[in-house]
Image (cartoon, rainbow, N blue to C red):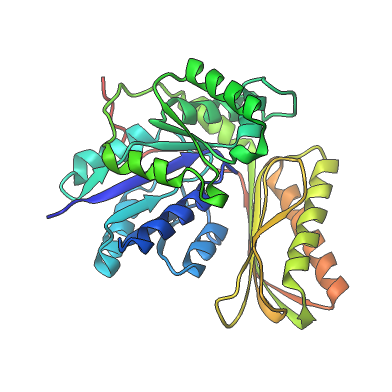
Amino acid sequence: MLKSLYILVGGFLGAGKTTAVLQLARRLQERGQRVGLITNDQSIGLVDTALLRGQGFSTEEITGGCFCCKFNSLSEAASRLTAETRPDVFLAEPVGSCTDLRATVSYPLQRLYGDRYRIAPLSVLIDPIRARQVLQLDSGKVFSPKVLYIYEKQVEEADLLVINKCDLVTPSQLQELQSALQARFPQADILRMEARHGVGIETWWQLLQSREQPLRPTMCVDYDEYAEGEALLGWVNVSVQLAGPEFDGNALLRSLGNSICQRLLAEQTLIAHFKMTLSPDTGPDLAVANKVRDQGNVELSHQLVEGLEQGQLILNLRAEGDPSLLRETVLGELHSQAARLGLTVHLEHAEAFRPGRPTPTHRLVEV
């Protein structure tokens, strides 16, 4: 039996993983390859899943914990995709606050399902602006040390370290960052990419499909510090139905997103990633809004073609802060914006929490 290629795409919140996965999936599909996608979140109501399914891809969602803690669910999701579409390539995107993927996901997949899958090198994507701040190449507000512990462990375990969004920095800043990363994390091959524009996707794919994940000694992870770092992050997932007179959904996402971010900035809350989708109840139309870090305004990577009278809004916010206060800010601004447009808000799901302690199903140690 021909083995499917299994690709894990890691990286911190806001690194552009979903955009990269979508670009690669499109390219493979155009070449006649079957692709299965697996998304991951600590709770239900994930923007990434709505986006990928909205683009027509077979997508499974693992909720209630990261891949490492939901390994059996991960293998079951792959089995469902196999039964449905028999993918040549699996693309799996873990939670952006997850690390230790080699020992808890890749190695167990290799050991338990090596007859089904060929495991690609572990890719870890990074945002160059955030990385420059973490490495103290630039000034700027950064996360607490325990949150940065997770970030640095993600980079440490990478086989392919992908600097994404290269267009956001100058060539000299990019070269300085690459040199600093290479000196600190010599185990990784470093690539440059602009996933949004499709730049570098082909080079990335050639490395993924031509190599298998090498066995390296398992890195040391302090699970107490890891858990404490995750517990500093507040997660908010909200799904609502909006209805009323016809309105401009693109303008609503921009206005809502910017008003929420301005409130958080005033409260000294550091945003890790903020994203929303808005889709009408009928038809494939979809708008997608994103905000990473504290700079700039909310951007729309996908826009609605027409106005709408009713539709579903899904909102995911990840930030370092009290989740109950984050939820209060989100819902307050949402109701304010809806009232301005004369819209009714039907709350389908709203959850605010801190991630629980990671407890992997398996952890295989290579020495």
